[in-house]
Length: 229
Image: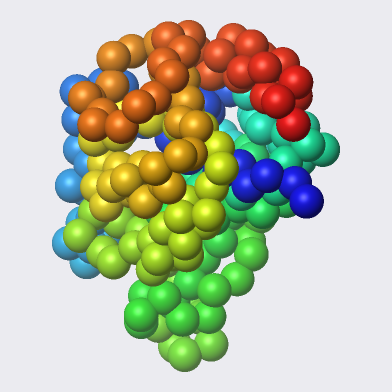
């Protein structure tokens, strides 16, 4: 039986594919205040602005692709039972080849009703129209977990981490809660690796730090984990 390996990924793994986040630019996300485009209040104040913002993100996503870090995470499935828990809304883990992915913060390539996120549908990279409606007659919105909204898949993610023999934390500062708390669900004997070129917040667990960008750190860790399998 393969060992259980869980990857907790954040913006840093997709940065090398050219995808920016607001945390890289002093609270701005592509020159927008996060309150305008990543909160429910922002949606109700100006749904056209929010729709246009995510239409642009989706169009950018269509022009980029997974990098070596995404591909190496997927390649670990040859040796381990791998689950990816990602804070990212992009589909680069899927396109990199991973088959079991939990998107904590939603998915850019999906849309839903503004009425309690009903009628979730895959829309790929196409834009959402300003007056586009879902079958319940409500406006179609991006299928994103905005700040202040519940994180419905958090319990599923916690259960996966609870079973982990190995936990890899890659490209996340561990500052965004509740996702950052997932680390502490790992069993006491689990091996924990943190890949990030920047310092992350103090961790009160025994971890192995790999202070490299995602592609470089994953390359060295992949070889090590292949030998351990």
